[in-house]
Length: 468
Image (cartoon, rainbow, N blue to C red):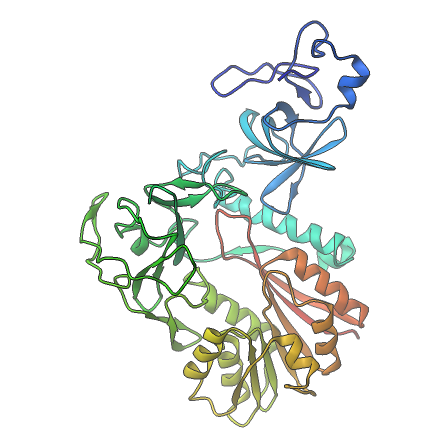
């Protein structure tokens, strides 16, 4: 496909350099495609599979950077701010397009060679930032948080500066941290990972961000003819389990026992149905041992649970006798930590809607007499007065979509002195911060953590309290 400007190379070709803004793959003469007038060529938007040379601008949510071509917004993956790249359009939408940087003409100082051979355009979509130096990944994520607070929460630059927005790395480095991995299985029975924004499976021989105990399992060199996905867990309590998931999403099927087999010099342990490994796993966090279903929710970074607990306790500073709610509480991680601070006579309430989470919370917190577990959606528990204020402290740990305005307003109405908001999506967090602000509350503290190195994801813990 041809476009006005300098010819943009395909993979393996040399790159002609263009000065200034974006240039498109050129035709003959003045660069216009044959039969297209100058005005028509300038008005026509980018097309899928087209390649264009452009200069990359700022980072944006979603693991990409922003660029513009003739005023058209381009979200570019595999790029860094300030770079000059050749980008291939992967999707066209009204108002914007998506593209992958396939050739780097001028590299940013923060660019590194991705350690994984699958972290490239057209291959695995799991790691968005392997081309970014680890320290620069933290800056990237902090920039995204700042932008969302400015744009969606309505905070001023001065207010954001006072929060000291930064993202801290967790122990262990950027590889080998993911303790729960779900491999997709293609039509040929091969396990792998999905392409970016696609259901297409990319067969892989190793996932470098997977926990070493998962990498050592012989999962990726054997067929899975009856499975749609294979889930592997390596818990902080030392348990390793593998489960094959059938196509109908029914309860997990038990695969045949996996043989002990060498894998790149490692010997994987022999495993037996349903995974080789127990159906429940042990996790260690907040000074306690937790027993959970192997398929149950738990933080995927081994250091994440304690990191988040420490942040919540530090920000809330629970005092003896104070009451607390742990909303979207899961197995009750934060409830247990807060209960240890407020004492056995204080009331701590966990609200969780998932049956597995409710069962895990009741089982793991049964030794804490002051803790009650309520099985309900948070919105329903608040609206139907399954839980009632006043309450002193609230921990909000909602799903990626956020708590939402209704929940925020009901929490404010309960009159807590402080709320610790644990967020996995900066945009949803920022929207809820705006709702708190409309009720006269302020974001008084913020911690950012890199719970998901090499990916675009960032975890936040914010302290919200009534305005003074």
